[in-house]
Length: 627
View (cartoon, rainbow, N blue to C red):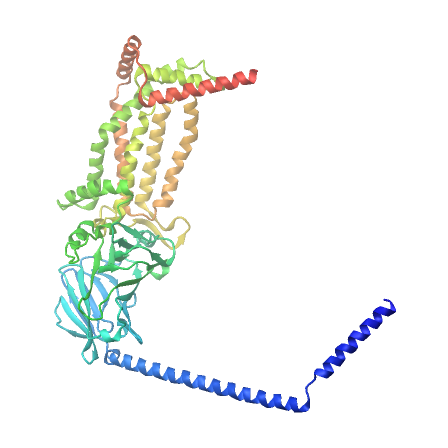
């Protein structure tokens, strides 16, 4: 750093120090500023005191307004809870004067899983229902009000919460002759308590669904919060997943807290508004409760009282025909589709159950038959209906079986791996000449599968089987243990079900019989593929054991007798089929087709075309390698 630079820095420092000293205020100026700051502090303190005083005054005014508003229902906020009972031959409903709603529902015509001659659907510990009205100053919550009962009979009661000065909240209840309960909520003289545009109330409904059946896991898988869309169709929350305040974007008619065989349903005449919030939480086995349900809803409310808010409640069994009948008792004029509470399966399967299975069950139960006998008879009926197709399929397999030696002889020159395409073409040619189809033997499985799936969906939801005994099975709606233990074992549970074991053994034997029949008709590479497939077929009964050990004995019994009859039909057809005569018929067909050759049609033609195309591609590939 040179001398000029140092001199420059010194001069700059002198200028800055001198300017700062020159700008420093005098003692008089400092004193004047201090007084001015003190005045500002006092002004701020005064303003803060005035603000706090204004806030306190506002709070006092709001508190007074709340007191005045609360005083409107002061009488209704104090009282002693009393029980009011509505009853008929089907149900006993207990209402509480605190809240004015149903706190307990008992169904008379059913036994619980402990053998008691009634089913308690819920009580005050399990279920709560409250209507919430947003007033100008405070909320009015029905569950906090004490109502006075009047007009009390076995089927009617009027609950009135008196606010004084002619202001009332009135709930009129009417029990029908079975499971339908009607309710009207009406405000009297309350319009001044609400905003001029107030038109909707809030509803909160919660429930812990009790375990009603012996098989906790099986029942839990068939218990769900279900709701009906105003424009048609039902939906539900996944039975095994947690859902908290899940919004429903569409308007809905009703919400159901559904068990496997019983439901509590709430229906609104004016619909529940969009964006209702639904909750379903699966609970643990040791609680003896299946789900924690919840619904947060909105619907119409008229503060002037000119139009009441109307609701209907259904507390009863999930019986398809009964639900159709009870729905007709509704005064709302809606297509509620309450029978959808009985799940019948996917659309195609639902059609089978809706228009066949239910009608057959209805017809057979009219004779007063035991439900075990009904299951046997419906199995026989299904076997009779499907027998022509099953026989045709079996005969197709039998033709393949008697022709197998000829197929083996005709295709033995195509033993090399590269000759497999030619072998398949030769076999397809022979199929055409003898008039047989290699796919005909698949038909029994295709026929039986929709029926099996239909029964899989119908039997566990058929309340007619609940509590029905047959042979060693004490209850066809739940499992039949031959041995039980106190703790769950992974994938097995706490028992071994006899009908499940019988079903799995029958399935194993039927698989062995089927595989043996198919083995007799397979040629070349098909036989090798069958060896790999048969192990999968033998493993399926083992897998079914772990799946069906918790399932109802009625379903397992149906599958067992279905397999038994299928095996019996197959054995009978095998014994009554003369292979020599069948071969002679096929030979005659072969000679006829030699004289009058005709083109392939249908699936056989498509298979042949695909094989020819594959052969051409293989030939082109080999020619490409040679070049």
